[in-house]
Image 1 (cartoon, rainbow, N blue to C red):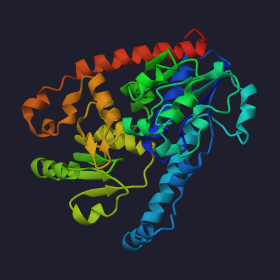
Image 2 (image 1 turned 135 degrees about the vertical axis):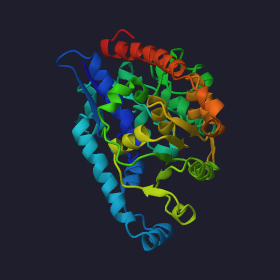
Image 3 (image 1 turned 180 degrees about the horizontal axis):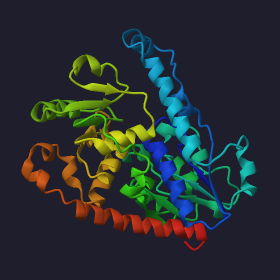
Image 4 (image 1 turned 90 degrees about the vertical axis):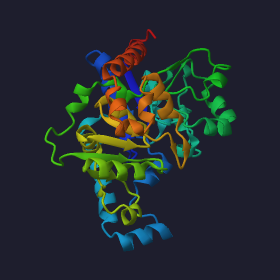
Length: 365
């Protein structure tokens, strides 16, 4: 059996790279000796643009003048991501002409991450496996359409591109009712990062905590009131705040925060694992807070609007308490966190998704 994965593995985004790593690692657990699972080293133009250090626009020039180390941090970040890929993942670089891969692989899996969100891939429809000539070879795993409003905007286009899949595995309920009109076999599976338990992720994390007690802030969507919550929590606890961000203008307002940038995926895992509290607008910031049993607050309504993906995950994991920032300040609510119950829910979802992946590998799904 030879399986190819197509996903956002080249993005300089912690969640994107770690979910690709997790999916490939999990598939290999189910394979027999001699089987192969490779990640197609496809270079999507919009994703590649995010990796470039220099963007010739007014904002970038201003940032360089005010924070001259930005260029070095950005370059260092890309280098560390590339090192992680080289060391930890098996990549198929021979993909200049994707249609030639049809004879090389038995199954093509697209996902996870927001591979069907046009705001990310723009007009690139490769992640719908449009180059695969045999529809029976098409699979998805926990593929995400992004927010419901984005699906509604691009619904006709998305449905057209997915109608030839024999079955679909998606990550959220976004668009699922419309998809069922065309495809009967649709399932919801957990993000690949949740397929690996805490012990598995610990193997990638440096064990020595060099930073003492701290509050971690990590945002992908621009935060709404989250930074003020971080400032208040800092005042109450006396812990320092470590803010993983490239939003350099924040440094002028929140001078009491410590700012970290230019780090790789394993560094990200280190900062989440060792934090006393985590504040985030990120889906994968939420995922790893759950995995490492962190007290955290996931801001569902950032300046980009409501995050359906985080909302859906917290509800499925019975962890809605972390959508309320008072759980960080109220000792009663903190003591209400039942990690055993949350772990049971995640394990239940994990087991269902593992059965599906085993079926894909064996051909018995």
